[in-house]
Image (cartoon, rainbow, N blue to C red; front, side, top):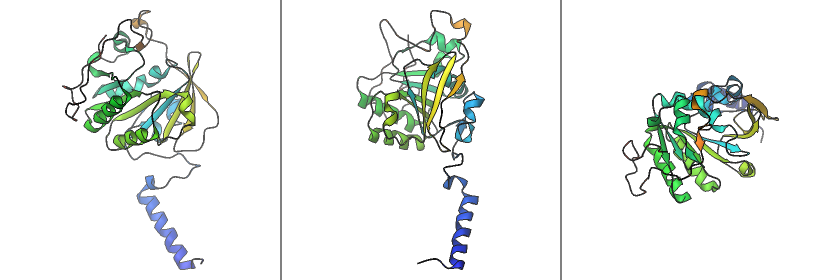
Length: 259
């Protein structure tokens, strides 16, 4: 049954009222969306122009899908991490290699601002991630997980939404075809002196083609012995996290990254 002219007018007025008072409640697919929470600038103007609200969003799950580990993902995140580390600490959960403290400090991030968590099982890693997000004492969580179920991703996304911590989930590019609750998914491919970025999913118009983003060279003071922020160890050591500790994961419960 078609609506009367007065009913249509009332409905249009109601929709317009929602749009004007709650701009985040309505998003059109042909327009760039926005986040209600805080964002941190990526440090790259070309990338910020492609991200809703002009930066990395807090309180949400961000997926970085890599063609290969070490293709430039850490240099891409470095400017944002430096901003966050001015106030709060950074958590590295299940990185593929040992954190190279000389490289982090050479890049401007003090070692005491870095926490490293290594677990024996994926279930323990997911549990640890939820505790970090719920506790809220850290500003950013970087989690490497080659295989993860959709249900676990949804739990992490919900936990992130309830916190103000920035969450990056770093996965292989093969996961691009899998469904995900993440509102922001990017694929990264190595490129000469930079990286190629494909926006697989965002609150905005579809981005058809990958774009090249130049990355700054590694700081010369880091030296040849520490070429990356994550360095394969000969004999790995790590701080431990007891699964039976209090859910309030604070400074006393997480050991700083060790080399």
